[in-house]
Image 1 (cartoon, rainbow, N blue to C red):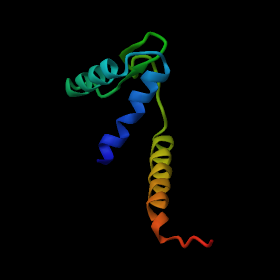
Image 2: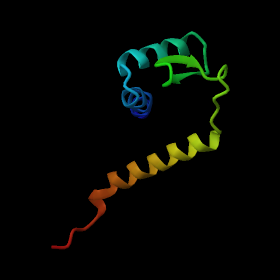
Image 3: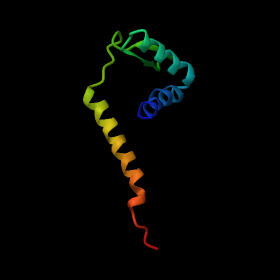
Image 4: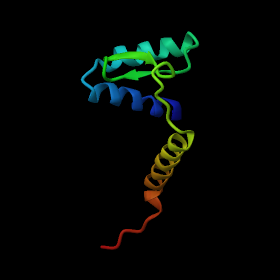
Length: 87
């Protein structure tokens, strides 16, 4: 379920860039399955490209921090039933 939730990221990126998100995510999965670990969405060319060839890199800390923050946020939302509402 967590991995499925993360799949929303490339889908939303493709959708916001005016691309066909289902086609792009399918192509991205295919490239990753073929061993192209650096495959990513190239919004300038509306295609999936090897980001390493384009020298597009993102520090690991940025990704892990974003995932940690999102996970903590979801955990807080799920704990709503622990709150007492005062009328």
